Length: 603
Image (cartoon, rainbow, N blue to C red; front, side, top):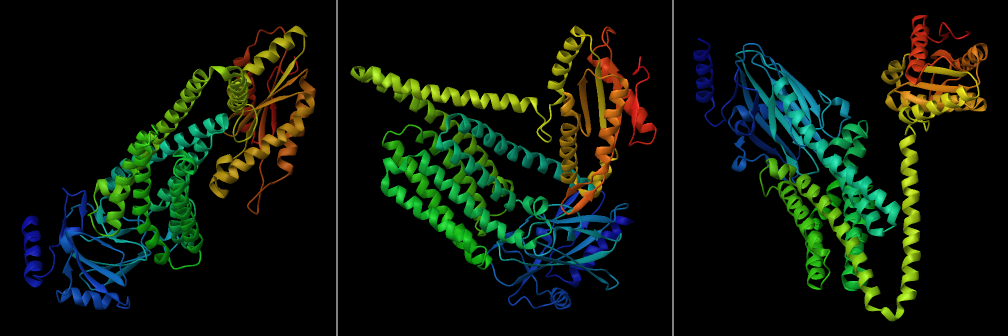
């Protein structure tokens, strides 16, 4: 009976409006529906038409099918209206999520007209704060309540200064969660590659002080920034309450990315020495993007985005030509550079072609720039390593070919090598120190603390001294994070680290961040009454002064467990920490913000 009802409804819709696209049928076998085949569209050149007028036009069959079945229109003026009909025959599901899979649209208005004539309106896009969206997601989205076995009309109005792309997809909540899981994995993998390459070359630059590694890091950071903006992640995570930044960050990040890219190419290909004329052109291109970046702060969006987008192709082809010329002139590192640049150029060409409406949106055109850029970054890292190896080989050959100047060259190279080794040793020392320290508080980390604790125990046993152990835990730390945000929580942890240092360092204490909001301190030559007094002094210091962050005074308190490790008891590190931990939990059971001692602290 249900199938007959659905069939009759669709038949009546087709007879009543033969010019319209077929309604989208939602049933138990449907997880997602791409609305492109079901859409009709109309252009509002001056952008002044209202929803009632457009519903009337759709009812008269004045909406046209999408050109070539594509929802990509390139850079356009005015407003575009899209109309579709939905028929929900799903027995259990009434709520669906409509997602517009393009994050750079300024204004997106959704109108739902129900069979009883009621019209519901929702709005999204970069011109509104991020919180206006139905769910926290980088693409504009709307919750749709679709009554069962009823036909609902959907009207979407889109206007934007960026490229107009309107890939509308309707999801069940489960289907959206699965899609987003896969999408987040791919995005995380891409940015993970960029972050890994950035820090890997940061270490190399700090060790070698080679300018090419520095500009490579600049290139990675600039490209990562522009991808954050193009993917809508910067609006979601960096400035969700600033539509102005959401729009102006696109041309600004494009300018930064292109400046970084051309500067890296100048240094890597050694244009100043090898191709002076090309070096002057590269500097002119960098100046152009610098002016466009500054102009993006005051000029209209499309005025700067269109020239920069159009300049990407000739700029990329120019760099490609330089790589070919350098390779033909015997510069071997240009071979890998050429492969890397070809990958990026292909991915960028696919993405830009969609922006201008030359190609349809699919997996390869949507994510081609991420795939191509990831390959480019990896290959460029190999190219830098090859370039460094080649330079080292050339130096060795130069020494062999100039035997008459061997002593002078060896002395010079030895000096340079010594400097490099000293820099590498300094970098390794900094890395070792960073491995011992907690990055947030600067205190020792848990792993290094155990080594220090064991050393303190041996020293105390030799000198027949007691060791005081304190475990400190911030009370209700989750409430601080939930109320003021994780950055405020981080400031509270840093403040507590400074408080521990100020209070306990005069007693020769070793302090460490034990994990999360828990800290530990070991104090030499400390007996029960002194330890309790010192712990109480620390507790009062913690709760007496609020943490100041972003204009807020955040009051915090701590629970402290105390234990005295006497010499000759045979208690090890784990047992001592366990007893202090038991005392800490007893302090929490007593109501928090207090000091509790282990039972045998005074024995």
